Image 1 (cartoon, one colour):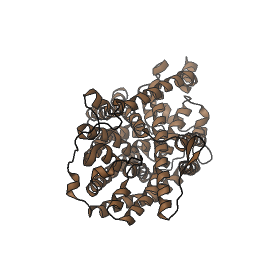
Image 2 (spheres, one colour):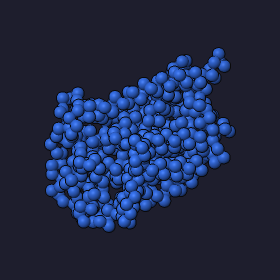
Image 3 (cartoon, rainbow, N blue to C red):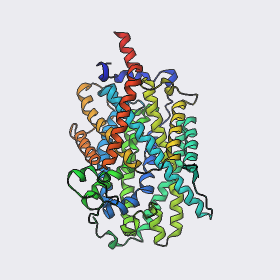
Image 4 (cartoon, helix red, strand yellow):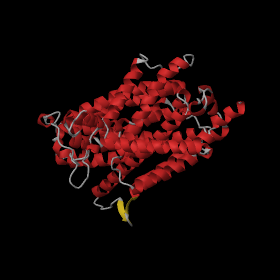
Length: 496
């Protein structure tokens, strides 16, 4: 322990010792294979089945392929930093726990509050996507069953509520059971992705790749708040298509890669985390990058990007749209079912990440300690129940809107701090055993910071406004509760 006040740090040794407390002990069940599946499970689905086609149609055109590569490079640099931290500090909480050891309690709180925004909103967004695909699957069997029904002055999305309740129960029962379920569903959706690539290649037309970077167009809303911050600063008129559109698309598609950082939140539940966590993080990121680039090439080759734009009714186009327009209706049906399966595991792993962050913050006393208590299955049941309630409210009663970008800005902020943290910890604790070492430190972490800040600049101004409001609310909560109730503060006061 070191420091005082806002910048008191929790030693890595104490963080690791806390994992043996009987009331807050997590069961160590996971292997490198389990972690890789979790990573692929949460990443494959959100991007391929919900944002690839619409981003091509609305923002980037065929250059969405380059946007995926830019986002993957930024994620890869950050993943190398995550791998070192997770193998050095194999404790639940991911970036929150890492920040507590390097920057101090206040920064740790900010990043934990930020991760709450990331995981909860992401779970709500993807659960709503699952609900939309459930309605499509019903229609394949001739059933008209809307998953969104009016309930007084609001629209109630019962499909979202259903999937969150079922998966929340599964996570409360046990992480290993969740992993087995995830393996089966992930195998199904990877098979569907391969089907998209293999079948779709036969319908690719070279003419659909021209122009590869479509000329810039005015923002549909006409508001400068809806263009990227970089576009506004650089004097661009909009970030729809053109170079600014390509860069904005990379920031939006970053949402598709969120997942490898969730692997780090399960480090405390992993056997031999020094070896297995880096393998899970880097392995899952490598697999999904190849699949994303291949799918985006196929989809934009099958369909002119203008036909992938969101319609006047506000309904976003999906991969199934491209196949249906080419007369491959059976493939569209398989994609819809595969997407339903795929998004199931995405929601599950996002819920898992959220509960583990709350668990770690509860164990440190920054939120009520009762949330860190584990049940007879070795899982934080109370934290899981709280997360399920929050996501049910957000996904069941509120439209998704621009939530994807809100998730992105929170994630990128976490990546920046973790990357800087690697440099700090190398200087302050060179003696620590590291199961994985980020290559070329400090070059790689610095490049990760630059790449993530660059992507943040290409998010909408309105997203930044919302993010700053959320962070300000977090500061108020910290001083009202966390600063006074902190377990570390109590320990330091006792020593004094």
